[in-house]
Image 1 (cartoon, rainbow, N blue to C red):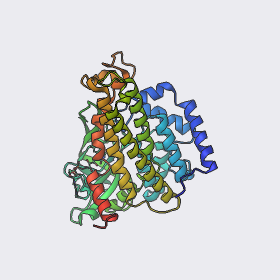
Image 2: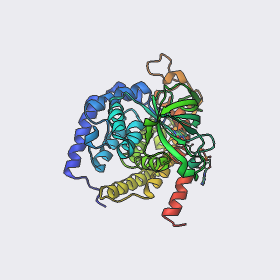
Image 3: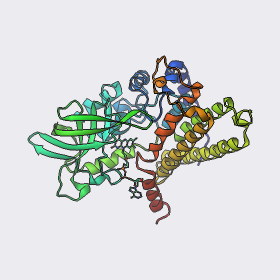
Image 4: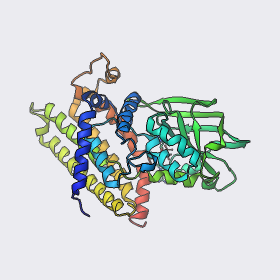
Amino acid sequence: MDLAMKQEDLAFRDEVRAFLDTHLTEELKARARLTPGILSDHSLRVEWLAIVNARGWAAPSWPKQYGGTGWDVMKRFIYASECATAGVPISSNMGLSMVGPTLMGHGSEAQKAWYLPRILNGEDWWCQGYSEPGSGSDLASLQTRAISDGDDYIVNGSKLWTTGAHFANRMFCLVRTDPSARKQEGISFILIDMESPGITVEPIITLAGDHEVNQVFFDNVRVPKANLVGAENNGWTVAKYLLEFERGGSAHGANLRSALNRLRSIASEERAGDGGKLITDPAFRRKVDEADIDVTAVESTEHRIMSALSSGQNPGAASSIIKTRGTEMNQRLTELGIEAVAYYVVPHVLEARIWGSNVSPAGPDHALMAVPKYLNTRASSIYGGSNEVQRNIMAKAVLEL
Ligand SMILES: Cc1cc2nc3c(=O)[nH]c(=O)nc-3n(C[C@H](O)[C@H](O)[C@H](O)COP(=O)(O)OP(=O)(O)OC[C@H]3O[C@@H](n4cnc5c(N)ncnc54)[C@H](O)[C@@H]3O)c2cc1C
């Protein structure tokens, strides 16, 4: 594996840095810092998408013919790493990262022509309707039913933990179209207009007081059959294809490194029990240095995946290692964040996290997000395939158990 960047990669990195220096204003960065988890405030995401779209960089992983950048995996990795280091708003745009590539692979020409430009322009924001009450890890047991009725399906059931359903105007959704078939075989992948009559979105407010996830109810919702992606009852194949696009182009290492640097800077301001700076306290220092070693291991694993992808290989179980170690490290860093700000974790001033609010945080500014980040990060070992399930994959693929 060659870890050194080529001259053209270094030049590209400088181009990205110059773009971010110009367009990522201090205000945008400050607003982005108020993000507890994987989603910045929606208005901020809309604003940032417009900025990168104007530069032609909205869709780093899309081919040029569909309005993407056409970048190779190394360029995508550099771009994601530079964005993470600079602190861009966290977009987690499921249109760009999930449904767009899926439509390119399985959608009709009409679906591609209609939906893809709307994703780039920010006209459509998508949410993922996979999980249901009782169907998460065992997704194939899902029960939301779609019954054929002329040119439409009539959909009934419920989706749970649907991130961003409250601002999304579209959902890509797995529904059961044939209850008599084996469970993976009776599922279809459909696109639902969230404005359709019969849809109710109920908020789920998380421990930190945030509204990111929802439960969505379908009560006789009419969905045109033109919105079926792939063949009827072949949705499992489409769903698996979509999951492939969660690989590559992300930058867990750079995100963790930024969080670690921030932790160091907070610990340089906070005091230890002996009155000195916390960063010089041997016990705390040791935890930070151990975390540094583990972050370096995540970075190296990520480079290994990049190297495999660049030479056309499949990263295999390495993406499960990154998911598991990346989320565990993120949780550990937020725990150290709590330890660093000590007593200031007690007052939790939600209003101070609203951009432009005249409510001041209790304690220093850097203490404001310690608890929300800590609480929000607990979910990261559950979503995107729980870490226990990732360990099963590693046990099978790496240890051949
Ligand atoms: C913040 C958040 C956002 C989410 N966003 C979305 C979204 O936008 N769209 C969407 O469709 N879903 C979303 N999800 C749902 C997520 O994908 C599921 O929560 C996840 O797949 C786990 O499913 P479950 O909650 O049903 O738990 P279960 O599958 O019931 O698991 C319960 C526990 O059992 C363990 N377990 C389950 N099966 C096994 C096994 N075979 N071996 C070992 N242990 C096992 C799990 O690890 C877990 O600890 C989100 C979840 C969260 C928390």
